[in-house]
Length: 407
Ligand SMILES: [Zn+2]
Image (cartoon, rainbow, N blue to C red; front, side, top):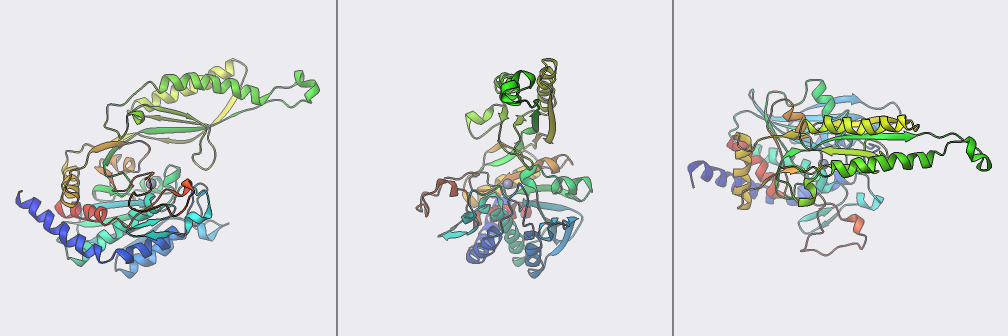
């Protein structure tokens, strides 16, 4: 083992020891965050941003609130991002997270339950647990008076679950994202691999109109349901073609290797009948053209559909051989004893906003995206829909921190 590896191992041991003593404190903060139902869509109860801000200030971090401010109709729902920082100097390594969560099936998911080293509740894995982990990572750096060669920034945003509009996309448009950044780490639940790429995606809402008529005079009308069926048939033909394509990137399962054309589902603030996920940069515009061609052909066949594009997000790839990729790999190895695999995320990922600015960006978290209930504890509830969770993952903290130290 070389001297640098020894240093990383020694620092990770000191950091892990500091974190392990604060497990209950972290779990309590996480429970408070999980109890705020920041479901998105529709995107509500965003006062979490303000609540979290007070915690950042208490632990002595500089913090800026940035965003579009409170909605006139709902003061609890202001669209705010938080930017905290620790350290000084020109260069900044960013930690990044989102505080909105996917919609819950029942309000009981916002009553967090602690079981041993785990905390269960909506958003505890994706990704309020990551936010707490990153905050405590920064606190640990502060406590051990780490010699940083720059700043650590923590960016916490709303609206990740619907494509980043008014959250990370807004920060990027305003020139406020990743200022002086040398890279970004995102504590999403990646099941222990590092995600260094994501697919692109385009989502559309398609509507087909009919003409009203009495049932006895149906020949005078146009049946919207039957027309939609004809449109869906054409889209299903395209689906078979699109889903033949596969990626050469590493990805978790063989089934996730194919491009996606999904009919139905929910995205961007409501049901959207159509989402296409493509993998390579040039593939998304090509698939968009194929999709719009199908809809145009429907018009020629006398069925005029109407469509809105709900989101259009670029694919991203960050090479793992640069300084940040190597530092992250080395840090994960120091903490877990194994170097992580670098893989493509099966969905969208906010690393794309940083990568678009030429910055290396990676997601890493030890927890599964849709983690099975941990083997070592029994399910507290019979309802399978509650399975989505966990946190207080001190290993993940340490990996983020040690990356910061070794750059
Ligand atoms: Zn997430």
